Length: 264
Ligand SMILES: Nc1ncnc2c1ncn2[C@@H]1O[C@H](COP(=O)(O)OP(=O)(O)O)[C@@H](O)[C@H]1O
Ligand SMILES: [Mg+2]
Image (cartoon, rainbow, N blue to C red; front, side, top):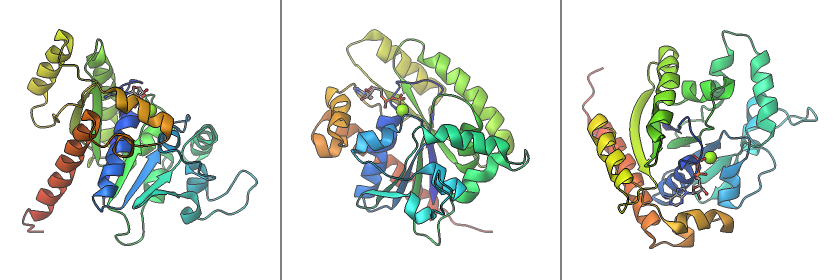
């Protein structure tokens, strides 16, 4: 199972848009995906037009707010074919308090331990992260192995990247499997000099991690209001084409990794 955190220390850069559309397309390609919403605004569910009753709080603590037992299977919501959602929302505030009360040497690994599915029932865990840095963000970076970092091709985006690298380095001290795998340029507008300049700089700095950019596309911003992914809303839109490309690259990397001969 691959565990990918879509993370960046800045809001409005396309994290949720990326997590939702990538997860949908991976599921559409026959992979079994759990999309984990780590934001108190529960944007993932809004973007997908679903209203799960339970979510991450119940999944991790095993209880609802009245103390009744909730199984992990009850806490995940089937949002589409092959795609399940573990919703976030305001209850994450309580979850963070709960995590903060756990023994210091264990609290950062709780989510990772809870998110181990039976057998090979899941192919991908995709985390839609919140921009800040708290006990939940640390838990996610302990549970994940790959980081996908959306960078908006706009002013000050490299500042956010710098802040995020600070987080990443401290997370890597505790989780040595964690790797910055993908840098995804978003809100790409070929007509602006700024977009092109930042894109070129990113290509130079991250020649291995750089992905094909996601263009600025109005359909991508309209789709969530209809509770649809870009593939369901406008399957031929540039946004659909770009996210299809991203999913393809991620699937292909996985296939290549599986084909590497193993000697241990
Ligand atoms: N490529 C894009 N083209 C146009 N609008 C976009 C694009 N990507 C994201 N958006 C819009 O920008 C806003 C912020 O995106 P979002 O994914 O919510 O960012 P984040 O999760 O990083 O805060 C949303 O309204 C979203 O619909
Ligand atoms: Mg978001």
